Length: 103
Image (cartoon, rainbow, N blue to C red):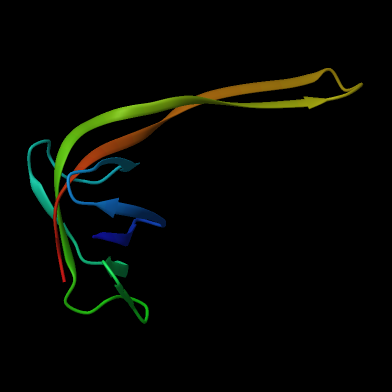
């Protein structure tokens, strides 16, 4: 069984027992959160597509870690202008462990 869920402005494919990294979620480490914006739910041969969300579907997830993601470097260079700009940043990431997918 797997599902497509919307967290923030991104969509993720999740399955039970899987750990995923998503954009920052405001929850403490160790807490269980409920994700109710389920876009698609697939169970064996049955696929349910929401309009826009599947009614009655919920996903339970446990917050494993709040961390920083990989470093991303944005580099701008303008030829013949003596202009170079280099900016690096690390996005805040939340690791979620998917506990249960309920239809």
